[in-house]
Image 1: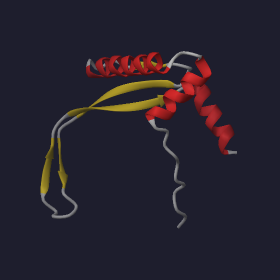
Image 2: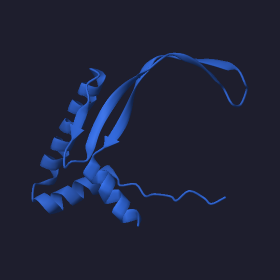
Image 3: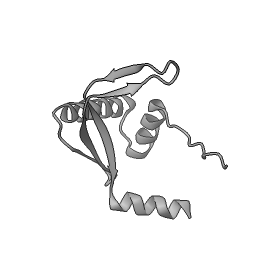
Image 4: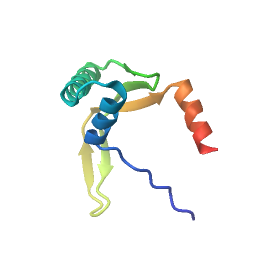
Length: 104
């Protein structure tokens, strides 16, 4: 069996630095815009509304997950899992095509 490829993670500070470098806006402005954007996205998802993401990335779609009974893998005991809203990322067609090119 082959191991799954590990992908890196971009930190919030690194993301801010890259946007600052590319946009010319100052660090505090970029941080405030990104944090405000995140708060707005979270609010719309709480209201069960899909949210488009900038730069034709795709959109975030809320999904209502029903309550169910799960199992604790360590003890085997039944565990009640309450209903909750999960978020699904739906990539745009242009992003899917871009990632396919990167893979090849």
